[in-house]
Length: 355
Image (cartoon, rainbow, N blue to C red; front, side):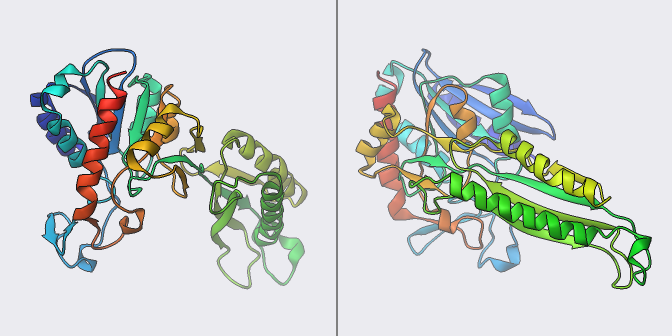
């Protein structure tokens, strides 16, 4: 679905506050919003994504598309992940009053498309080389704990083309399932080697992971399997490079197909998201730790942070709400989380835009 209604609504709130709103058009009637107040070579980007995951309305206790205020919580699709960040940022901006026009460096509100799927919005920004600032904060739900690193992710398919034949005589074909057996063994061996070579104590799961998550092959027990396909994901640690990992995978898996007369095709299923790490000594990390009273941490989920960091900005992930409420029925954000987040974002704006 198009996100233009959200983009246009945000622009209509920001323009009266003095922001210059640029809408970056994307395919399928989608768009990014870059709303800028002020000018200069430094400043702060407050970034969020405008999309949500799909939902099953029948599993909700109320309409997921209508905000409900109940039990000291705001319920609704995206209340935490992550439309809750935009009203927090807007409230912090409005609270600045006359100070807003006196900021010495630019304040940029960034709203992106398709973070939950292709990250096409963030990729388009990286390709265009904007926005530019000194600091960037992505408002994913972290309980206002500064996240300075997360793993990357790539997903791939292994397709094996065998030759079908009557199962009474194995010589009549080439069994793709038997080749897949070797492929799985090689993948698990590769995983073991990666986990011996790479560890990062800053993560709860301190090693890279590789998960075979889907497999299908053949069509009948009495027929030699003519085709088999398996999908897996690989989550590398900071310092690991996805292109190099795919090269290593190809070097290990493709020869198995040649040896077994069952050609193998290795294909990436998604646009890769590289691992992300902002140094603990980064000025932004230290500012956020001081303002929130929370030490910086790592996250298990991937974000748009690598794309903004690649534009030259010190980058962290930090916003109100809990990731535990995301992607499930009856998503909510606690009332008690909102005002502390407004206060912290307001202080962050004053600190980062007055250097």
